[in-house]
Image (cartoon, rainbow, N blue to C red; front, side):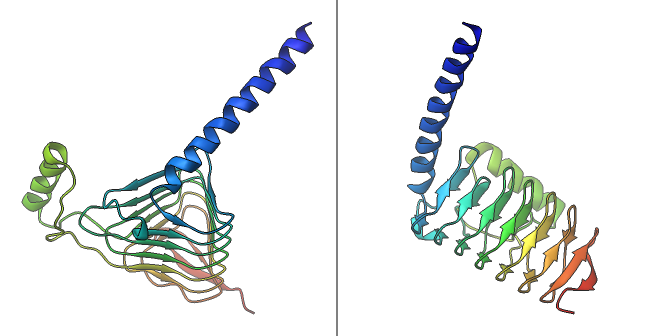
Length: 202
């Protein structure tokens, strides 16, 4: 009897989980342009303040478990084919994030193409605006710069990629790295700040 009850509970949880996944996929995909075979999983989230589906464009057979966000004042996220965005990872764009094909992004990775204002008073006013009126519609002095991640890159867990960075084809970003500068193709990067450790082509 106990075994039968356990099987029934498992069956119910699987059914509920499957329905939740489908609902999440529908909800997220309504805010993006998405290629055939791509999907959002239950942990995924999309925040498209611009309400323009072309601002988040996902290729074919890509799986998203993380969060994609574009701000009202700007932002654009383009993800290629056969990519993976892990659980807890956040791609937040005020400028542009370009990701090629066959890119693997593990869990808890932050890819952020903006910062807050450098001047302390301006920054305080910016936070006040967010708290009282929401995110600004005009960029003002918020610094932004495009991030480009080329084909066949893998970024391991808990890494951070900051604005203005280009990561070359086939590069590997080791777990916990903070990438502040451009990465040459087929290079293993490691550390905070990340430094080149090995040429993977050789």
